[in-house]
Structure formats: structure tokens, C-alpha cells
Image (cartoon, rainbow, N blue to C red; front, side, top):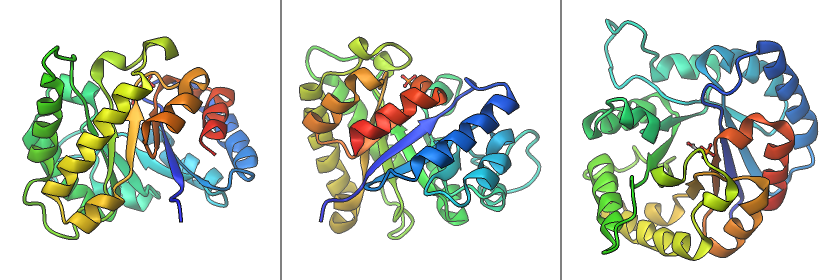
Length: 253
Ligand code: PGA
């Protein structure tokens, strides 16, 4: 049986009015009811997680976080642990987003965050992506390196809930016409599946959903999901606009 498609909304800092956020949650709850055949996850900023959980509790939408601390011990000012996210009602967390990698998060930290997410029982959405495409296919080795440093020798079982989000950095935060083309994405999806099969237990690797992120909008969602072999999307700017987000969900049904 075909697995459900998965769409994750990454709000970043797009929504800064709590009243608007509440309206969004209420609207999503109402309109997500008819969305069978698709999983919907939403990652608002930390401060909006409790409210999102409260409003969306009786809906099929799962709530998660955009990041978590790589540290297991307490003296780290400003950090939020996986355990705290779990208390707040989160069920997943985005790990290693390129915007965080660009502000200093290294491979070791990404690896630690994956462990912290697994310890807390959160599904990690591991982001990988090349900064640019090389004429000689160098981007494939960038992806292999990122997957390998994040997942190599990870304990069997720790990655049971793993989701991989392939987000080429050059395609993030633009418009649909600047996103990756389905044929190129299809090649990359095959490459990621092959790499995961080498790094993880083979059976487990086959189950890992592979999402695409980078300027997914209603205009390109349908073509991308139908022609590339991805399991769904990680959506940034378009996920903070209810009508656009719903149109993307509709395209994935
Ligand atoms: P975008 O962001 O959809 O705005 O390109 C995607 C992401 O960074 O997760």
C-alpha cells in the first residue's frame, strides 16, 4: 500500500502576530479534516508551540519545532531541549536546517541534535542540501558527506522515525520558477535512497520519507510531487499563508 505523503510547514519567523497565528491554527484545524491520505506537520516558533498543540489537538495535524539544543545537560542559556519540546506537545523537530548551519551549526552539532531528538522520542526531520550545483556533480558528494556525518554508525533503532528533507540552499526562499526541476530532483532522490541504504539498516532505510524543500509553492507542488519520487515537502514561506499551504496539501493528495 502506498505510504501517505508528508508535508511539513516550517514557519521560520514569518508569523509574528500571535492573533494571526491563532486564526491560522483554527483555519487549518477546520480545513485539514478533509485531508485524508496526507500527513500534515507544522513547525511554528517555540513560543507558539503550546497554542498550536492546544488548537490542533483534535485534528490530524502534528506540531513540532524548528530546532532543539544539541546539549544533554542544563547550563546552556537560551537553549531548548528535546525533553522540553516533548512536554510542550511537539512530536517532531527540524534538525540541521541550512539557515542554522549558516549561522555556525556544524556537523558534530547536527549529529548530537539527532541523538537528543531520538532520546526525547521526537521524529527528526534532517535537512541536507548543497550550497551550489557543481558542473561535475560535486553536489552529490556534498549530500553524501552530510548524510554520512549525521548518520554513520548511528544506533540501530535511534533513527526509526527519521525523515530526510533535501533542500538545495540555492533554491530556498525564492519563487516557484527558481525551485529545482523534477528531473533533477528525481536523480537526487534516487541518490539519497542509495546512500541511506548504505548507512542505515537496509529495511529501515527504505522506509525513510524523503522530502523536498526550496521554493515549493502551489504553482510547482503538483508537478514536483508527481514527477520526482519525493514523499512530500518541507515548505517555508508558503506555509505561513493558509490558502497557499492548503493548496500545496491539495496538490499532494
Ligand atoms: P522556502 O523555505 O519554502 O521559503 O524556500 C524552505 C525551507 O527553508 O525549509
